[in-house]
Length: 243
Image (cartoon, rainbow, N blue to C red; front, top):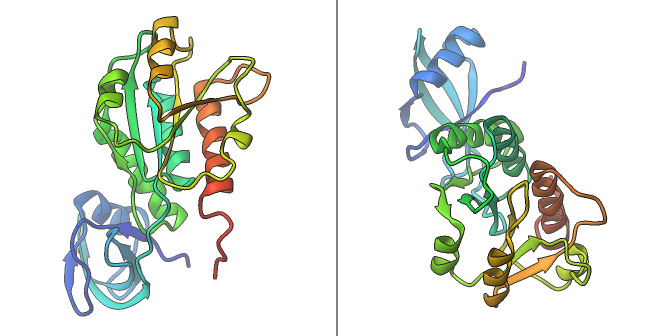
């Protein structure tokens, strides 16, 4: 029987009793039909992964006893996704896949051609948490409140931002990433592309680096995942040995 994993925003230590969130309690008790004595794995993004036992459970309440540590906390590479907001289903999918690909932060932005101005960050944060539980990450990426693109750039910490560009002289992203190391970010523009004035502003920032993703026009979700795959495989933790 597969042992479920849950993210809790509480400190984890041996012998401690912790209570699952109501949604998690419902999931354990009503969906998975787990009983007292069954095992659960817990993580909180700071204290590693722990084995826990269900002490008691009823309806949407579950009390868990921490037993022993399973994995020490590890810090993944600082890779960020900046994404022009898209419609809900596509945005949900992007957040799920970005979490599986190990991003540390997801930053929605608005641009002149953004097709939606509403981003439910609470919903997206929940999707990121569930994806982290499923893919065995030890942390959950931050999902930031949306910002106008130029506001974000004015506040940026200087980490290189690579962005998809249709210019013929733009280097392929794989080549542009040669020798790069985190922190890094991948910026995906709106479905209609950046406007001319927006591109002019992007070119004025020294930390912004145009790069190409091949000869075909990609949907935003395809571009997001394609770019993150290259960042992670060339500059991230995909070359680390897993045990």
